[in-house]
Length: 187
Length: 187
DNA sequence: TCAGTCATGTCACTCAATGACATCACGGAA
DNA sequence: TTCCGTGATGTCATTGAGTGACATGACTGA
Figure 1 (cartoon, rainbow over the protein chains, first blue to last red):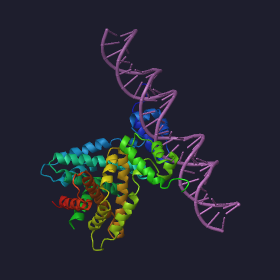
Figure 2 (spheres, helix red, strand yellow; figure 1 turned 60 degrees about the horizontal axis):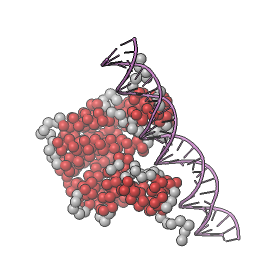
Figure 3 (cartoon, chains in turn yellow, cyan, brown, blue; figure 1 turned 60 degrees about the vertical axis):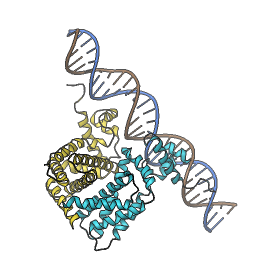
Figure 4 (cartoon, chains in turn green, purple, blue, brown; figure 1 turned 90 degrees about the horizontal axis):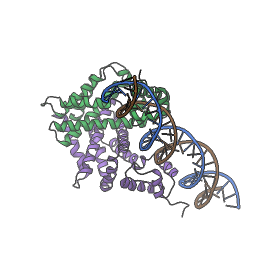
């Protein structure tokens, strides 16, 4: 057995989710999260840059996966088709995490500070999309626009998926939302 | 003459812009801003909820103007046409503020915390758009999507306008970006 | 003249966040 | 086996954001 229990970061994540759910984000202190995880507040800040970030672990990996899917789309695919490939990949990744996603989203929706953090993650995703599109030869202006639009679709679809009662697959909601978008701009 | 100099909020805004430009957002304390404005730090927080908000005064009025334009579009206009009306109205409002907009945007772009705040203002705008579209009889899903897309256009166009060297009118950049969007989804 | 209002100042406090330094189990090298 | 370096953690002190409670005093209206 090591000197300390392993996976302090994981324990901190769980503790944070639990406390944010119970008492709300503002109602819980970093010291309380650290206590429940069996570490010090100082250690919390060694694992996460701030009190918000603890809810956004893995967002980097998600972004990388989506960008990889975008880059891997056939060269003949247009910008929005490449974006669609990225969105559908994300749809697969969340397949079995619906319950967790719901709880997490409830916490985030309830707190402006957390919504801000989520939004900047989305902005980062948009930038990554735009870069990847430019790698494919798309002009900068169109690339940014396609990227922003793609992220808008992601956000709307995710929101639908988390909100709706049924058990639709996220990938299907993504597809439906993309279809809505096409309809929007053509007539 | 009153007991205090008038327009403390205005002085705080100017002081904040100046200091954020000189020393950066993180490099300036609220106490310094308050000092330069001739008030106390406590008074700063009576006028602005936090250190970021001081750069976003007027965003509420902007949102109201744009929503009014959207609501005022002819009933025959489709969702994206109504959105376009709102964007062009904003284009007019910023006509003579390009210089200020540039300086302000430079500060915001340099600081993640401020970018987060800007993003949530955009999200608020998107929500307002979606509500206004629903008032016009547009279904909720399509309304959200059109709203998010419209805000994406706003963001991209504003970025272009602030970045480009020439002296194009914001409204024209908005039009061009909307045209790009139409091109994106049709072929 | 007086009472009430309102913006501000003052004081005390909580909590997020960070830097500096100490601790001590573990693993490898001598 | 012994010893040393490493790395994750604890401890302590400090800065700065943000808030609540209360005091002040110029202005306003009766």
